[in-house]
Image (cartoon, rainbow, N blue to C red):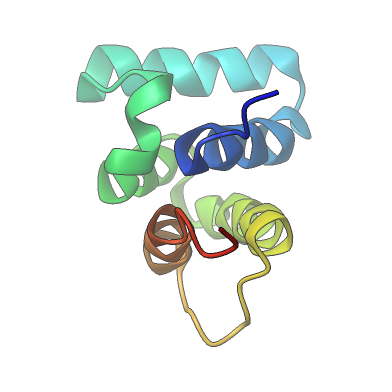
Length: 102
C-alpha cells in the first residue's frame, strides 16, 4: 500500500478539525473557499494563507479557535513540536516533511 502524501495527511487533519463543527459547516467552509477564494479543498496545503483568510472571513475572531484545532491535528499527525507557531507555519513544516523517515 502506498503511503499518503503530506498533502493528503494535511487535508485529513483539516477535515477532522473542521468536521468537529459538523458536516454542513465543513461543507460551507469548503464552498466558501472555492467560490470566494477560487481554491479547492485539495489545494489548501499549497495556500495556507488564503485558507486562514477564508476562516477569518467566515468566523471573524473565532477563527483562531478553529486554527488551533487544525494546528493540533497537524502537529499530532506529523509530530511537529510546538516551536512552529501559527497555522501557516505548521502547514509549511508538515508539507516539508516529505521523506523524513525514508
